[in-house]
Length: 305
Image 1 (cartoon, helix red, strand yellow):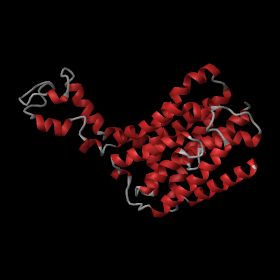
Image 2: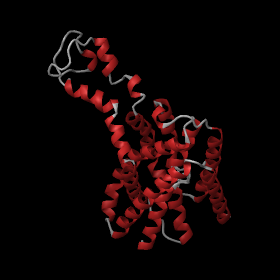
Image 3: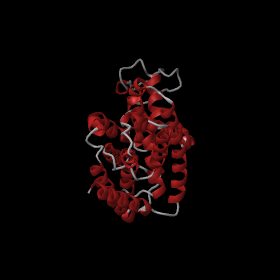
């Protein structure tokens, strides 16, 4: 692989990861356009480290806010640590106890269960960190089960053209009929789970992880910018997980200047893509991305014919 190839693929990855037009689809198509050898899934995942850096840096303050306000961290994990000598929370006695060094006393069993139970959905269903964790699980499962197909069968221009086209229709429909009333602060656990289930479909190139998650978020009534922002936040753990999984393969092949340069370029272009897309969506819809996907699908089919 030449340096110019790494730079171009890094730019493509950074931009298309956050625009709803499929980064994986573009990384498969670009080598066909330029006559390059397919760089393989491992290099694609390496470029995702760049977009991970971009999304973490851009949303650093948001992540700090999410963690600091998380019920999962501030209540559940805290009380679990304080009572580590007990077998389970449900076994706490109703009488006075001093497992927390005397800070908590005269707490009845029902009160303890209501406020601190790990299964207390009244708190967890509003916890954005918990919602992101649960929503990530389907994508992780899909990645583990279908990884071999993602490296072979799914990297097919015909499949990519089909998923680009039908994904565009769904995005157009959701942007048109969505209520656009719900912001990120009012996202529910049920909504997060549904969006996470659809994120698992992004294992197929052309569907677009950001595209499919934004599509469902819009269908569920989320605002355009809130849908995009949640999609970007949701990308953090899934990209991190994929990067860690493929990291041994990268070490075996060798971390050369091409890979490092691709990651750097991907991080810069990804940061700019997030910034300007959120700004764009403040006053506009997703039609430009719908049109691009359809046009690209037509071009692919034309070349295949």
